[in-house]
Image (cartoon, rainbow, N blue to C red; front, side, top):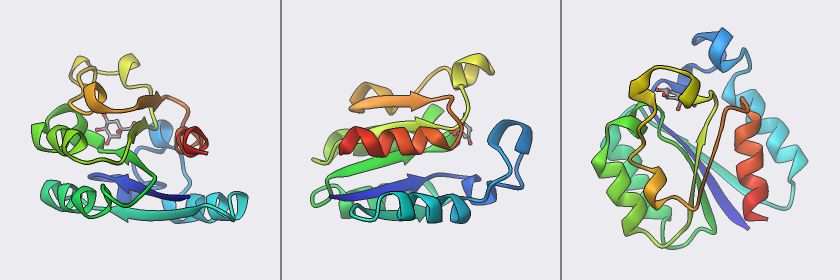
Length: 137
Ligand code: DQA
């Protein structure tokens, strides 16, 4: 299986950023554990703070990967463009969030990704990503 995790804005700061909400592990460290837990699964990783780069990556992988695990971060709540990209590609997208966005501010309750996602996993910390991977196996 060929999967990719795509992370949106500010997620490059995981480990340093609001650790009370997002934890103190860096994504690089977390990825290492994922790779060792799922040695037979190709798990690629891409992060960008730039909306168009996230869309370009989805177009690039969206017709030849088995699954996309997408945490569009703040763009989840604002980006019609990323929402449309999820619809435009063939590969299924599982939407992921580290925090439980429904227990937070009202503006985090809306998602432009969810209507076209295969499913949504949120609120389990970094484990949300692992659950998303398992959903593709
Ligand atoms: C997030 C939740 C978003 O509301 C927020 O803007 C993020 C991270 C999460 O993983 O919990 O940057 O997607």
